[in-house]
Length: 272
Image 1 (cartoon, rainbow, N blue to C red):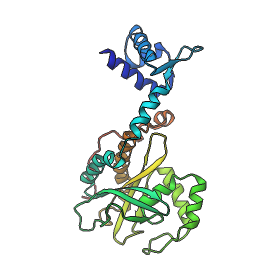
Image 2: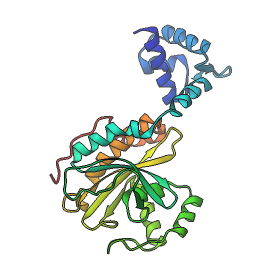
Image 3: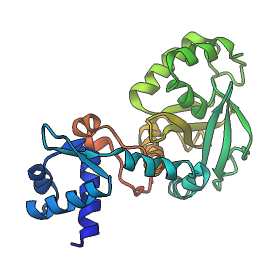
């Protein structure tokens, strides 16, 4: 293992652990303690790590944050999302969308159209209602309380179909469910014959900055298939979140590692 590889491995470990001593890092990465110590000294000289003078443990320095911030300022979410959108569409055979919040609407900023004749004719720049779409409900569910209450009181709750929710109280109940399970659904609430499943996209600070979804005909995206389809969407959204610098908190990782998708997606065969 080269010196550079050792250094990068130690930086990754410190990012996960928060802080650690030479012995703990040695056990974690499987490198001799003397080599770990030498690599840490090099990283410390470059201001990438710092050592607590009291505990003698090492942690990442602000220099790493500066490098990450410099990269993230130049990130174009549409460019980063494109591979995940394409793969999500190919694996589910449904249209994939990426949207952001803009006042009382979600704005579609990219999409990958599916082959179905029932696919939504929503293109980049289109506005979608927050109260009646999976994309909109995901974006609402992760707002802070003050912002959420302001939006809920200002929404018009237009009856787009017979399934549309028409009150803030009903929407609040559904938003709590979305927060609990981590994804949103739309059962013909905005468009007749069309169902959607959406998941949040987080940035490096842990804030939800976008939502990713798939939409398709209601006969193909039945409620019984929502959990399986949601796993595909969650995986794609998680992949994008990681590309934007998001790291799942250690407490969550230790409690439910099975809920963290891999970087690759698995084809969904149910209903096709």
